[in-house]
Length: 176
Image 1: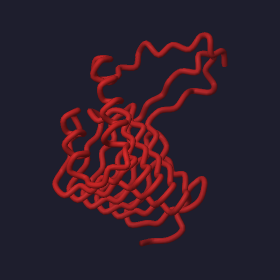
Image 2 (image 1 turned 90 degrees about the horizontal axis):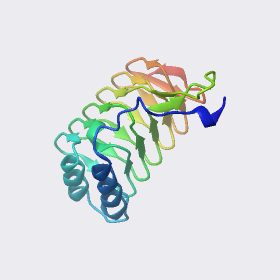
Image 3 (image 1 turned 60 degrees about the vertical axis):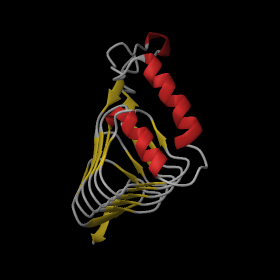
Image 4 (image 1 turned 30 degrees about the horizontal axis):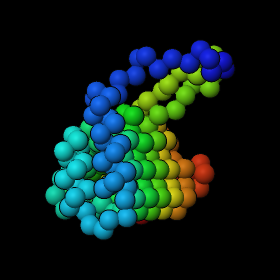
């Protein structure tokens, strides 16, 4: 790859640069901060375009790349130090728990391309799933209803409903 040839021209950020800059400031001061409570985080994310259902619990030190590309269902828990790196849409169903330090990544690069082209794919997490602490989801991952991605696992692809996945790469270990 030749990084001097990299171009990001096709990628659409979804909002003007000033909105993104304002979001980065607001996020640093109030969303990713140590301040306890969820209400202000929910309000701010909604103000920047996130769709958030009823009863969300959003812990301190939360990082969201683009709130306008985030949909949370009802009674979603987002743990401390969670990073949702959503260059593409991230859709999270009802009664989903994303634990401390989990990482959801919607963007990568084509290592086989001389231009190191950007690749963005959405992530979908169905109802009643649990992404455990320090687990990571790759671009394009679809987590089925009730699935569990175990502590520190690295998951990609389509994960079956009501199964438990563990490891790096994550493999199915048993039914839930």
